[in-house]
Image (cartoon, one colour):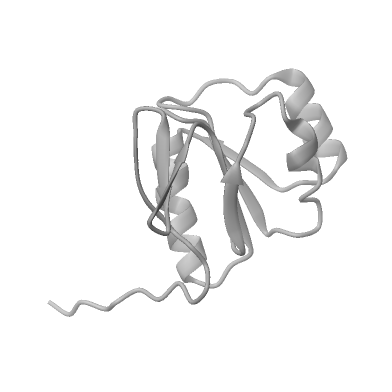
Length: 117
């Protein structure tokens, strides 16, 4: 078996998560987090639609982690992000974190808005 080391360049991958936190590039961030190729910041969750709308035109895809399990998106959130043409992919937060790392390692313009589990 051949193993290849993954390079993220200057980007910071999701290293781990647990009850109420994420570890991004070695830094622990409590609560919800918005991960982008140039860094990660705390995020106010699904009510903070404006932060996600501001990403229009900047990403190939925005992975929206909805917590420990997949659930329906709030109608207003979906409507506003579609209007802003933000390319959205909803899924559970653990799946979103893993997918974010894979796409980030490929050099894609990817973001992840993750609800803490």
